[in-house]
Length: 534
Image (cartoon, rainbow, N blue to C red; front, side):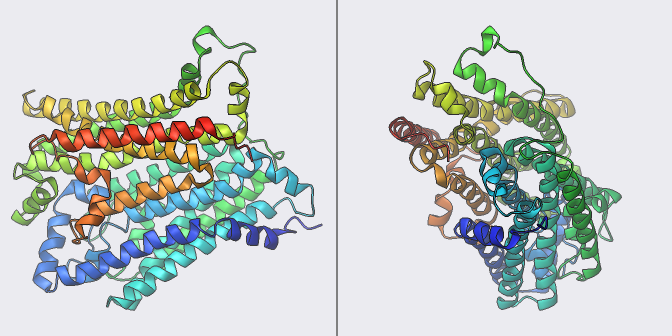
């Protein structure tokens, strides 16, 4: 029997299993990019308006770090993909990594792959099928994106360059996730390793773009798959030859994944788990202590990153007047931040973006409920004297408190950095408040996860789809004049833009009430339904 026997059957099974997931994610990415391109055509009809907008972006180092440069200020297409070339590629890479882990390590962890392996299925079939299913999804997104952008009037060559750059960037991190699935023993760890790789790639690209100039990026961008995608330069030269870099990287990483898979047993990882003591210590003899023990490593890692981000934001805000090279750049920041005080406008803009990322931690932490249930570990805990509500509440508390800790870490470090630079602590409280004001909106996402886990655990991926949708609406809504009702669907749209704007308590209280209602309804559903370990 060949090691690839059964691959075709597993591909068909994977596509059937993801018959809802793949179209939903494809629609989110394609519709967002195409609507962005369509809006840009009407927003910047003249060469002067495009050049002015692109110069405003390129003059702000913080914006360049987040999104990258507009490599051709005269190009309508280059301006239309400004926010989606790097940020969109990172989100697409997360999708690709989740999909690969879902069909490899998660299947091993749940025992289904062992059942399939007992039939006529080769050793490499599952990994091959996962990579093929993911590649099909990425190819579909890339092709539909290119066709959509061409349909709204953008040049065909640039549209295909952008679609292929997106798809090949996602392919790089699908391959990285395949490697991570061989090294670790849990789907959560494999996804975490892949997410770290995506984060590192994004940071490298940010350093490279800010260190570079209008003629080219710094060296760091060339060390990042996300940077490679940007250096294809859709609508700004269409350098298709750069696509060889992600293709070569993906080929090497996939080869490494196959080599590692051949060296391990089914269900095991090459990085062994460290055995713990036979008996739990006294501080671990409660559901909350156990939840904290399971999630503390992730929270510490996130907190370290947020301290760095806070220091960066605080330092940039303190020197923003020197960094802004044009009145257009100042007006651009003022519109995003909702105030003419540039420092406050900048911090409000960055904190709004950071809040959505922090909500991702809340979603991830609360989804531990589902993974513990799926793996059967929840059943073992609940077979003792631990009530269901108490067990669920333990993970929810970690998720809610974790988002607060991360927000506080970013706010404090940004405020302190700003105070050190300016020599005054007068704005420390308002800077910290500018981060914490987003907490109720983040908690709505956690409540949504609990609602889904309580009533429809098989649909938990919808929580990630909701988060991505809120992010895209928030990032593109005002810029491209989305309908007000569409922007109001996002809980983050109702948060006051602090520091700078006046505090508004009613929307904060409403968001908090919505979060509580979702948590209560989800808890009631979980209490009444059977456990799902399928």
